[in-house]
Length: 380
Image (cartoon, rainbow, N blue to C red; front, top):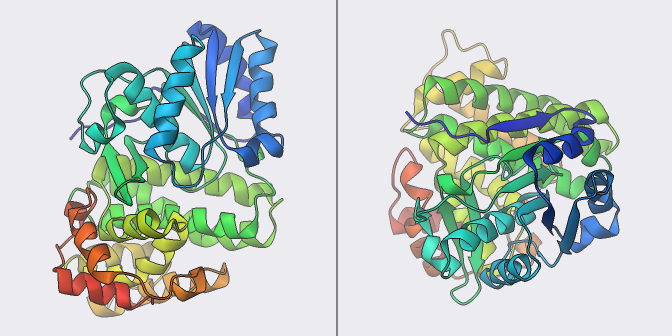
């Protein structure tokens, strides 16, 4: 198997303070800082760019990235990068800035339109050098070969899987994650849980990816409620940052499945938060997947402390599914699309696009269009 990971990764409390030295050693001179207005407004971007100031590395800030970044935002970022003579990208944020930065990186060296790179390993050249500073414990976009860009013309989230988009360096400092809103913490944590569980049940899983994904599952169940309840709980934040990293290591190398295939459509058409969509769909899709990968649900049940000896596969699967629902309820995940303001979704369109999604083939079975519609119906 091939195993992809950034060549260097900084982890743990205070590791952001090592960034200046790493950039100095790499010899970079000017950064395109890719982030969003929230992070420039709350001082996180300034804290990170302070590392550049220490070593007198110049930078220009591009903070126009919105949740569910678009093709236009990627293309604009490339223009700013080239127009300012930047020699590396410094991405700061959760999944949206990280995904946008990955798109900018690929387009800056390969040219063309970002829509050309939808799918698996479509680029020919390594992306523009990128250092990825993560600020949420969820997407793992700072360390994976996956990035997602919304094609605003088609209303579709394009899944791009590309080894050339890997960052040179990833940074996961939980001190940058404290005091995040409870809703965001819940959504990103459930996103990481979805990554871990989908990776475990996918046919592309291996002993290596199972090990990291199972540990991520256990950490998330143990610490996510605490982080949602108290945004300043640094121990919970640190453990969740490790879980996010472990889940990212796993899914970047084994793949995802139909939860993501369906969630991408909800995000693309209705601009809904990705982690929330995953959380609502996770028990729905995994109930079906349990029929095809029962041994994997036994593994998850064991890791969560369920006594599996003498229990049937169905009992083990039911335990896991119940635990997912209980965790989602505890951290305040909405139960329906109506709660998110979507009263009459176009189920035909959503199902058709989900079946075309790049994550769909990673599922233990390929649902029919009718089965997909029925699964969407369960979260109306």
